[in-house]
Length: 502
Image 1 (spheres, rainbow, N blue to C red):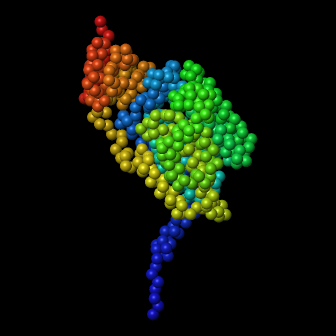
Image 2 (image 1 turned 135 degrees about the horizontal axis):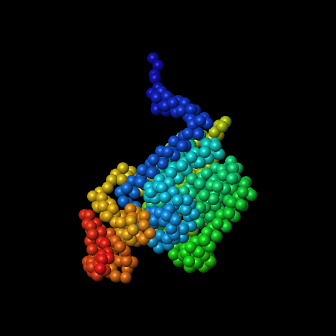
Image 3 (image 1 turned 135 degrees about the vertical axis):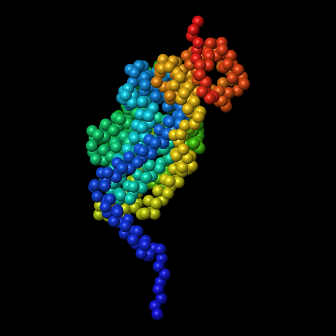
């Protein structure tokens, strides 16, 4: 009588059938046909997800002053008016010299600014998966399973989701532009490469620092002449945009002075301050917030980018200055400062997988356990750090409370020609007017000379928890003295109108 050996999971018929099924599907997807449609399907899925999340927050009035400022500036461009944004008290092009906003503003002639900006941003972040797929498959020759994992890891990147949710930022449009630029450089399609680089530079002035690093990367890869030209263009743009064009719009002042006030008050004095104060420089660079941000950027990729450090060259100059800048964080931090990392860390991860993979006749195949680790890390850090994490119940976004409906009613009672001061949730709904300011909440004393009391209409939330007795008393005294009357009251939202009748 012969003894039978127990069948282990590794040798089981079921496991072999699963493996064979996977190999059959892999063989089907390795052809040229799937490579043409798979990345666009993935981009469409990401676009639906990103667009739904950002538009849901817009619908439920969770976007405030920053979004309203972009909308007001874009609306002014659409009206062929001077794009002076009263919410920020500066020109629309002053802060970042985003030239791309001019053609976007012209589109706002036919399309509402708010949904258009959020949809455009969601599309840009989603479509970046297409060049990433082509870099993975065509340039680095990775297998389809590796490309799928890279695409999934990109779509789960927490800072990518935070950027999608953090109002609108024109530099978000540069993420796919940088990925396309690198792909075109590998194919030596230099005209298309130049168009992608110019597009990226048009979204934000200091992205010239990223282009300098991109030029250095190309030079290291053997494309010396294009690399030098690219780096030179990046340097020239950074100097002109930051030191000339933006300063001219700001009345001769260096627009980033506040962010680097610790080191100086102008470009030269700031650089000198950094060189002569290395202790402060190191302290600011290695601040805990910067370390936490690095973790959110690198850990979802299982730290694979550190295996291919040359792909961090485009991040160095831009990243150093962003780490040293004192920029107040928003609800989701400052993910707009990570646009270069969101473009080049996926490329570095793809190159790292190629380095550790096993080459066959046509493709480089990566160990399934490593790919599983990347997928697990991406999902874990998405749940941990993304604003749209499942722990934040994103499926509940988009609903409107009774208070939201009261805010909408109050906004609808305002005439288009009125100048308005309003509390934050109402601002995006009021952005299509030349004069709009935010109502200052929580002041100890409201003074008659304050700009808010020069507006035709003031919209306030009477239940605001920041009201204190003194502030409430002085506000009531000033509105009475100025001649404001309560025109409408919707729940706790009051609309005060200046009585201009004699």
